[in-house]
Length: 234
Image 1: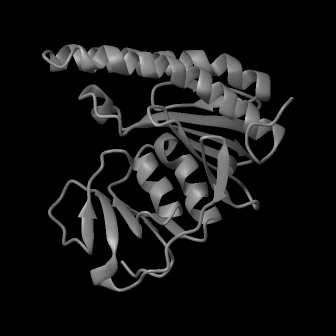
Image 2: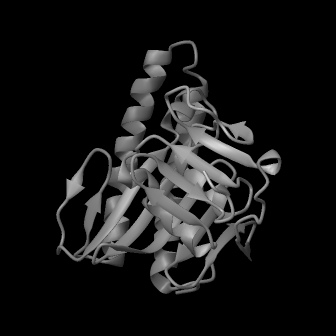
Image 3: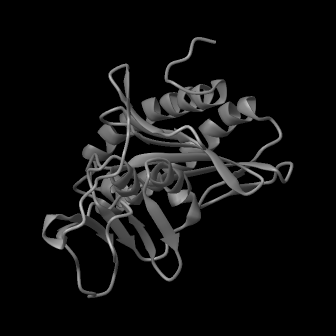
């Protein structure tokens, strides 16, 4: 097959599956814009759209690794116990309000380790991706560029994304985007210096975890999820 992005054949097949799914999502996004007078109607529509993502991409992914399982926030498809695709629509609440800041997060895990990670923003068609041990990249308009975390450490210089529900003290210039998968991708790309979040569904952050690590950052998932450029103490 002709490779679309720098990386393995499996990575490219996963990207093609994302592109096919994203085409339908872009159509759905146009429909949601027409539903803004009825927020409940928009929520129901987006919930159904998320279910369609899981159903439509499953067949494509099983062509990549036929015996793999599938984990999403809504369904679990048992596989061979070794390989598993982890999939989520991140930023669904933004989608509901016709805000284009949402993404599909997709990871391939083997023996409990993430090997391939993709975070794809369907509206601006920008892909953040990584393979274990091979670095991380951003792809847009047929061009891939290597990603690296920022080198900032002074609190006054920092831009920090938050996804927290309490009134804890914040650090730096605060951002609340509502899309954790893209928050992690932006830490990896050096757009944010850190991301701090309440616990999240693993399906939403599996891909972002590898992106941060392959860009030279650090991430911990204890009481909170904290991803940084490795220079920030939080």
